[in-house]
Every structure is written in C-alpha cells, then in structure tokens.
Image (cartoon, rainbow, N blue to C red; front, side, top):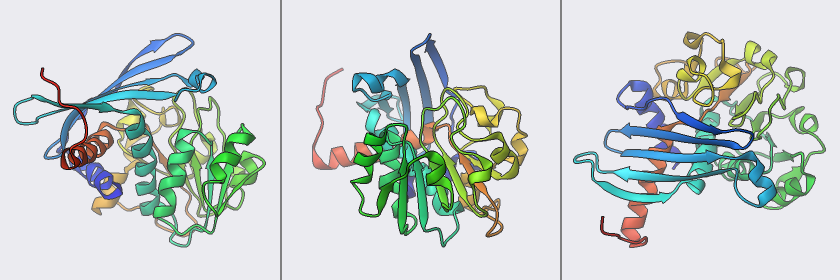
Length: 296
C-alpha cells in the first residue's frame, strides 16, 4: 500500500491526474459531508463521500465515515461501492508514513503520536514500517485511550502530556481533532519531522513551526483553497514555497536538506490516495471472490 500511495502522489505532482478540490456541506454545530472525486489514469476513477462528525466519539462511532464508488475509466460503468471508513483511516496514516520515509532523518528512533483515536492507531500501524523506532510515545486527552493504544505495540508507552511526548522526539505525528495547536515550536529539537493529519476544524500546528520549518504537502492547493479543501495552517502561505511530497519522491524537488532542518508534512487528505487504496481493495476482493454482485 505504501508504494501505491507514493506512486499516486508522484502521478498527481506530474500533472496526469484529474482531481478537483474537495467540496463539503456543513451541518451547523455537528460536522460536514465532503465529496472527493478523482481520476488517476490506469489506477482508478472514483468518488468518495465522507462525513466528519467529531461528536461521534461520544456515540461510539468513528468521526470519519464514508463510501467510495469505483467506475470503469473506459466506459464509466460503476464497478464497486465499498466502505470508505477503514480505507480513509489507513490511507491517511499510510500517506503520512510515505512522507515520513522521505523526510525524516534516517537515524530517527523516537516517535511521538499525539491522539489515540482512529488515526493514532493508523499511524502506529504504518510509521514503524518506515523507521526502526526504539521508543513510541502516545499522548491523548483521554489517558485510557492512550493506554489501550500503547498496549498494542511493545515499544510504545503512554506520555503524560503532549509536551512530554514531543520533547526529544525525532518524529511527531499529530492525529487530533483539535481546534488549536497541540505542538509548540519550543518543544521541538533540531531535525524533527512533524506530521499533521488533523485540523479539520482548526489549526493543529503552532504558527511558529510553520514559519520556521520547510513545509511539504500533498498538493499546493491546500494553501490556496479555504478549508475544508485546504488546511488552516497553510492559509496565507506562499504556495510556491511549499513542496509536494510527490515531487520529492520523483526527485524533481529536494526533501530534507540538512540533519538539523525541521520538516513539516501537512495533510488535508487527497483523492489520489483514495483511488490508489480503493484499487488495491477492489483487486484483492476480485481475486479472492469476496463481496456481493448486484444487478443495476
């Protein structure tokens, strides 16, 4: 999956994909329903409908729920409808891991995961695949959730606070639904890589970090489009100063340039990630004969 996600980012940055900005309908004081269509030639023609309702944590439901529909890129015929909740979770952590593989120091050994929900679990699954972490610190506003997540991995432990988790870490993965920054510039040591996939309803990263770091994105449109298509942290930034991860993977623009450089990967999620992951799921389902066929 990580290689497929990397290939999708390269395809996007090369200009061969067709992906309009995400649009969303907001439900006041509750959440939003977003539409994310995309076309990656030779991979998938798809659309995802995804709802983001942060209050679902109190209902025992995921905050992100969705459906993905695949279509034949030759004749437009519908091919499949699949659950988008798990795909969204694992492709988000997976793409962040791809960025970390490209941008974090090779000697990174301490990982801090901020947030112990669905994305915290996704990052715990994917990040150890790209670096050999000796220690993983998990911090959450819910200590019980942090403890349950840490119990899944022998090298993981619960940190007492976000600051406790971040200080001294080589890689910091922000996976929260915070409305204000959860990581501060003064907590970071030189050479840290910061990954942020949260911030649907507000900034997750301190503005001082965004100003001091080299910033990497899935697409520069995250700075020129308002949320939820764009990222809160990127509003007002010069899009030309941002680097797409696909450009780093393709070798057309540099990634990390020094051991002391602080790098930031700011994600908004992108339809090419859904396309790449949904194609893997569809092909696997067809190969194993699972799923239900319905006449239309």
